Length: 131
Image 1 (cartoon, rainbow, N blue to C red):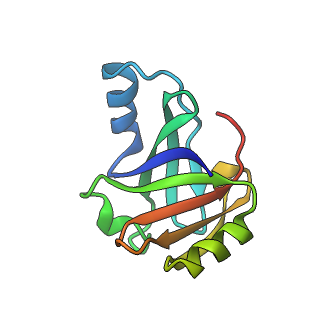
Image 2: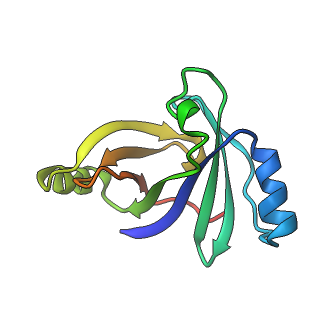
């Protein structure tokens, strides 16, 4: 697996883009994607070589992250070449699978959220394009 991003729930992507881009100087920013299955908008800010902060904004009161936006950083994402095998391996080691969905931010590739044995939220994504 390869580290990809840390997810940060926000009220308004544009406000946080101003912080990361204008104040902190991180100028490599992806487009804003609508992830329909998750009812969120997301944007990736490159903060290191192929390492990102994902800004995530709920677009619906029923979005899974609507209640998390006050918590800020809430998950870490890793890329994997074989999502099915990695899910099987992690579940056999006590990880709990929450959901699997297709993400527009990863060109329709599948992503899965799991909770590790310590209660942390982990996202796995099928290998993605570079931003």
